[in-house]
Image 1: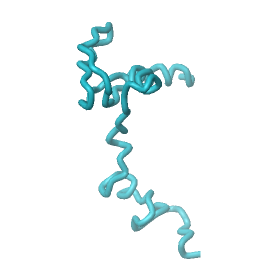
Image 2: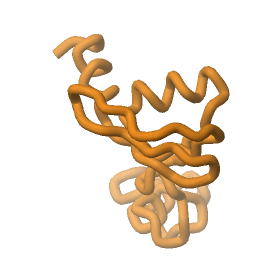
Image 3: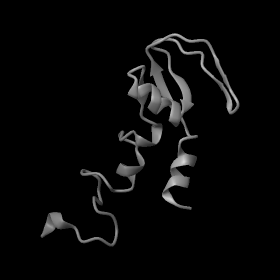
Image 4: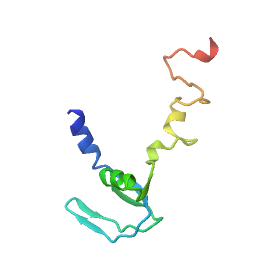
Length: 97
């Protein structure tokens, strides 16, 4: 698969937006979207979220997997500063050089 094919497939991924406009449901071949109400989260395909964001019609909410909270995979996996094994196993620990 080349980059264009991967991008095409990724644009179908659902993301959550907070619209700043009102609109009833949109009926598309791929499925129904909406309704859109200001301040209420709604899931839409990435291609629509990007289009609305460029026109300043919504805010994108980051997906759950991007949350760098206390219990995130990054801290548990030792990828964030402050974790017990910051660089992970197999890497020299630069803090003790």
